[in-house]
Length: 188
Image (cartoon, rainbow, N blue to C red; front, top):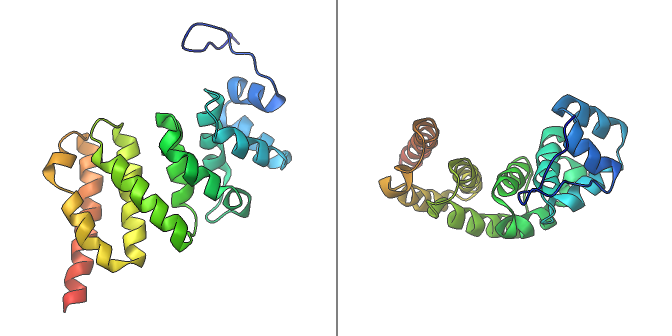
């Protein structure tokens, strides 16, 4: 396999077997490794909240690929994931949001994620996939707090939608139709 390089063309030098795995294995091999090395979850979680790229975003991606809904292995690191999202690199943000989307959240976590997600959604310069995950988080939280649905409908202004791909626009509009339908049934 050819060597991997940092953006400045310096070769990457993995410091641990886990980092080597992140560079040299395919997804199935990484998942198999995680299943046979439970101690790797902690290393992956710690690495996922660093700026040590490309390991950090790959660790977050691998964690999301391995966990089940409300997975206890990831849940014990959830506060660190949430705290790190604003500082994370773009791909890393998306993967950390995906992990959080699969978890049952405390009120404090929901509050923090709601604020983070609003900021990410409103930043039209952000990658559309990150904005989509942020919008999904807003919808998830609003399912528990119906009074937030009106705010989400306001956030779905055409200004925020026009920079998204047609596929992501379609997904957002489906979520919006679901919210509007639920709003109508509540008013009856």
